[in-house]
Length: 247
Image (cartoon, rainbow, N blue to C red; front, top):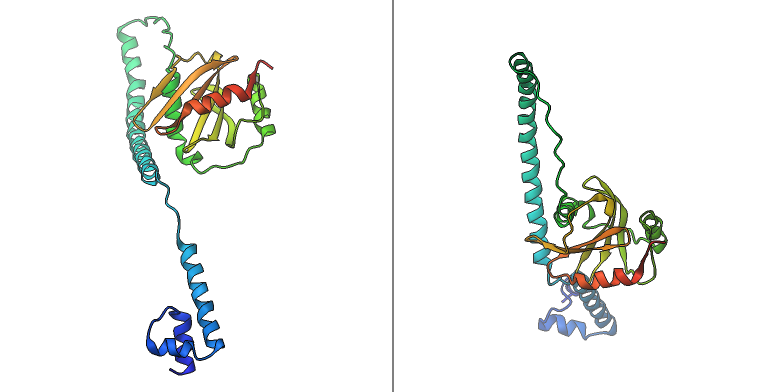
């Protein structure tokens, strides 16, 4: 085996077991060093391509696909609804004019809207914002969290854990705080909803993908949402111990 062929084999396939290659490898220290270096590089390359697959990867992919299908379905429904609304708007402009010529206007008493279930609103918000927050990681500091918590009469202390996202949001028309914490299994969403929002309480709630719990704290409701395998009670206890209310 000549030098050119040997070097090519040593670099391309350093683990070659052919008798001619092995004999040429042991012929000198320089040849052996070249093969050893190529083997080391080959191992490093293979190790760098190995990626540990999370145990719940399949569940995460299915969850994202499910939310994507629901999102596309909602977009399609809104598109058809918009067309129908446009037609209804034109018809609606005409009907009152016709009715007024036949019947006098009748006053209708205002009907008070029933309060919405706080758990259903939380589940809907997590689903709708999943693609915006699933990869968010702001590494929010305790100071940043407290700057926003102060609006709701609360202050967090050490022990809150890793905060991946914190900002204000509209919780079905009520100004609330939206946090995402690192849980035991995945991400945990926390809403701080002022009691003036007048939502129907729900201690525990769930759908086919997510589960949650809520409880009144201070002058707000603390709502926690996570995936089915997430031990939310641990997050709930952590929030109880690390957040002080009525400051």
